[in-house]
Length: 183
Image (cartoon, rainbow, N blue to C red; front, side, top):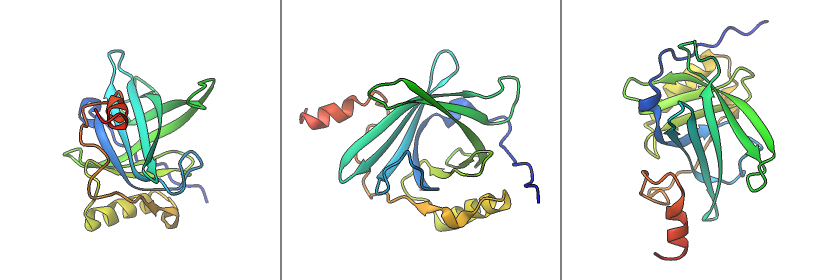
């Protein structure tokens, strides 16, 4: 049976989408540590219209991160279908890895979102806050199910009460060095 065409958000306001998002749940991926917690993504719009992507996760209190770039797959389309490009390994950026990033749902206040891609091998539930209301979470899971995702693979991401830092405006990561040296 052919899977139905995935519904994708139309007319996404990239400006409003920027900022910090916390990963509430996801399909485990080989790119992320299995026991990562406080996982989050910070998006910053660049002058050329592309988006700087900073993904971070913490394992036993140690931060690992990867930076990449997102851009519209088809600039003439109003569908929220983005491409995300990372270079691996991060310390020796030689191999570009490009993936699809489709916004399947976002609430009108841009507070939580459902992200997937055409193969249905990846799925993320993101929220502006580290914790998402259970009822909203269940609605997003149902939306994913309606799009033929195998939601039994969803893994909730542990998020602490106090995220590791409280300066969301710093996208350069300098807060990390400051905390390291106690400045």
